[in-house]
Amino acid sequence: MPPALAADGWQVVLADVADCAPVVEKIRADGGSASGHALDVTDADQWTALVEELRATHGALHGLVNNAGISRRLRFMDTSHEVWRQVLAINLDGPFFGIQACAPLMRDSGGGSIVNISSIAGQIGYFSPSYSTSKWALRGLTKSAAGELAGWGIRVNSVHPGLVETPLLAGADGFVESEGELGGSTQLSAGMFTAAGTSVQKALGIDDTVERFFQHYMDLNQWLLKPGLIRRFCELTAPTLEWLLELGVEVPAQVSTNAHMPGLTRAGVEDVWRAHVPKDQGYGLVQVLDRARKSHDVDAVLHARVEGLLSEDGRVTGVVADGVELRAGAVVVASGGLAQDPALVERWFPDALRAGESMFVVAAPGSRGDHLSFGEQVGASVAGDGWGLLLPTAEFVRYHHWQAGFPPTSRVHVNGEGRRFMDEDASYAVSGGLIDAQGGVAWMVFDEAARTALPDGYADWTPERVTELVGSGHVVTADDLTELAGRIGVPADRLAATVERWNDQLPLGTDVDFQRDQTLAAKGVTAAPVPIATAPFYATRVLPAELVCTHAGLEIDGSAAVLDQHDRPIPGLYAAGEAGGGVLGNRYVGGGNAVANALTMGRLAGQNAAAFSR
Image 1 (cartoon, rainbow, N blue to C red):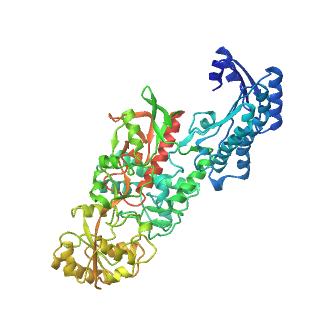
Image 2: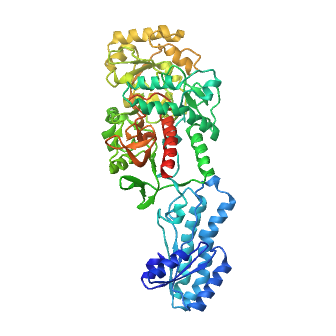
Image 3: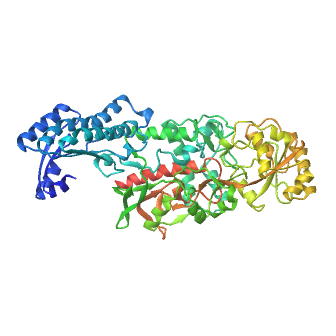
């Protein structure tokens, strides 16, 4: 701004606590006129002294731009009283003192213009209370001054830009986040982290190795993934978990029976338990990481969506966010998946659309597939096309089970032939595939005793809700199994035989066919399911419909570097999480797969990006 004013013929006066000499010298070298002065904008006496000097040396003043400002990007409860006062002193007291000091000289000079540099944070809600309040208040100060000083021929306006590349932003090197908070889908999750050979496992007497983890991971994914990348991931999961524990993440050395109980639990269908459940779930995990970020003075620019990459001579050199070019030694893309963009889901994970109107998304709002457009700009390869995680659920459910509730324990899943084909509590590592093998839809059959035993307080699985759904057609009911079989289109004799065999085993604590008794025991269920025998009987379709994450990402190697179409690393570009393709495969290995991928490969990407930048 100062060079542009000088180029238009104005005598420019720069005043700041920082050294103005470089800008003054540049203006003078370009043929302009400028002078520099030391000024602490929070000191009213310094403002008075500066204006007296200007009156003595120049005799007139026609404009004032209040541009000094600071930002401390701290959330409400993290903002200390000291930070609050410091930000308001510079961002609000400074303009007030400046207007008071300069207005009389501008009046005596025949009028002029005052421009206060506010922010979009002065027009919308912004997470940082000190910064947002200062900019809202500056807007009010502007209106007050405009009305008061109009009689002196002085115009007062404020401008409210978004992200602008200034030294203020340069000091915030770190994260550029499109949403209003960090954490993405991890913050919404249980925070489970799957890893092998950890201190938590050892404390529980569990002998696990990287080799066993690698073999299970590759076998479950039918060896469709690159072994080198998966071995590297498996090797780094335990060190990453230990690093998290050192930061303050709490995973007690105790057996956990579910994804919401801190400790070690079953992740999927592995031979040893590997899912580490942290205290306070994914939210707590993100809070620990965020505290570590702040302790290292790494800033995070929120509400700033990256639009593209900058590159020079084949090397990625920064990003463009809100129209501003931000230079960097290297870039790590960790923008999440694509589940929130219907067109990208249709292109990269069309299987999700087979659920029709029953399909719903639980991924974070920022999962818009931005990584794919970034990769296209630099010729990156994509891995994971057609893969993602769909959790099986009843056709009427529209929320994750934390809100929706849980189906009754006493239930049997049958295919179109009326035959049972799976453990009804099988891990989602395999349950979606089991249903797909039956044509993509199965029926869940339960009875009146199961319906009335459902707890209240959930959105979908409650006694009253099931009754409501009978009327809408999402739940079918009948007075006996023969009538129910006719209504859902399966052979009556086979459905009756299936329920009879289920009743002969599960209520007695055994399941010789599908070993669900072992799954229930792992979940901490001690009471055997009651028989499915009380009319009326109910049925609802079960299908993979809950879209959790997508696996199509920028293909990475064992260093988390993004590869081009010829399998060569793109200099300066790294990716992790759903944005980094090649770790999440055609089969999700179980709870904690995505979080372990995001944090393990994210840590690796950060380390290698920092090394590359040096």
